[in-house]
Each structure stands twice: as structure tokens, then as C-alpha cells.
Amino acid sequence: MRLENKKVIALVDHDFEDLELWYPVHRVREEGAQVDLVGAEAHKTYIGKYGVPAESDYAFSDIDVAEYDAILVPGGWAPDKLRRFPEVISFVQKMDQAEKVIGQICHAGWVLISADILKGKKVTSTPGIKDDMTNAGATWIDTPVVTDVHIVSSRRPPDLPDYMREFIAVLEKK
Image 1 (spheres, one colour):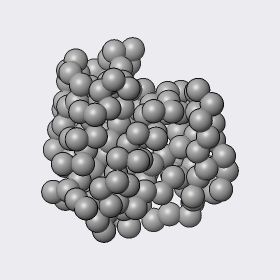
Image 2 (cartoon, helix red, strand yellow):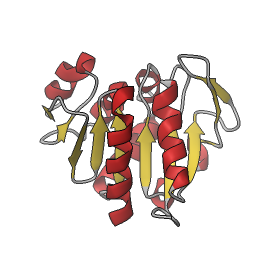
Image 3 (tube, rainbow, N blue to C red):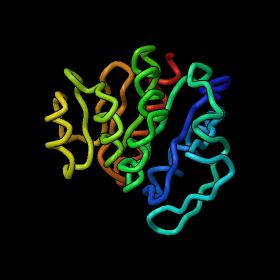
Image 4 (cartoon, one colour):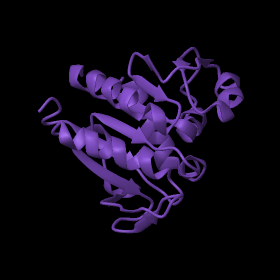
């Protein structure tokens, strides 16, 4: 179990991209990590873009981000909602300052943009937010996965295997 004793936050809100939440959650759990789904409300069922539900374990206000080793931000339309919560912005900023692993895929880059942590970073995302990423100061690269120290980014669902191999490898070393 490569990630035994690791704790990971998986952010959730309505309209997450189903595969971009559940594939990473299952892969990281398979490697032995504890993954907590965290949303605005605890024990609330959030529905993905394609109808797959996800029940949050905790509310943003219930957790101490310092107790976690990594955070996963799914894509879909959820990132546009998630970035409006000051707690989410704080989580991402604190993870960045501590160089804890931050995973983002597809539209999840919006959360990192709002957290103002992308200046000088190399990232990827869905091409649809390429301009947003570069306007935030990042160098955008069109490849399945990009790692810049502790930030692991990916483009879209077909890239999930590459994304998770890299995310797990980076988290394992932390």
C-alpha cells in the first residue's frame, strides 16, 4: 500500500465531472490513503454532471487542512462553485504554502486560479480554460499530465490513468 497513512481531501459540489471525482478517489483509496469527501455541507448528497451521486463526509468548516497530505479538485462545473467558498481558497493556499500535493483536472484549474497560486507554475487543463490559466501567470502545456513540484494537473477523463499514476507517485514521496 503505497499511500498508507496518507490523508486526502476530495472536494465536491454539484455538477462535478463524475469520472474526475470517482476515478481519483478510488485509485488513491486502492493505494491505502484515507480520502474524505468535503463539501459545503456534511453528509449531503451532491450529484455529478452525469447523475452519479457523492455524499460528503465533512463540511468545509469541519476539517483542519493541516491534517491532510493532499487535495483533489475534480473538474466539471463544480470548480466554478467551489472557488466561491473562502474555505476552499484557504485550503488550496495552505496546501500550496506547505508544498502538499494538489491535484487538479479539467476545469479544476479555476480553483487554483482563484487561490492565486499559479504564477510561474507549469500546468495543463482542459483547453477551454487555457487562457484563464495563462492569464493567471501559468505556463500551459497541452499534455496528459504536468507536474510542477507538488501541483499535478491533467486535461480530461481520457488522461485519468496518467494523472493518477503521477499524483500517486508525487504523494508517495511526500
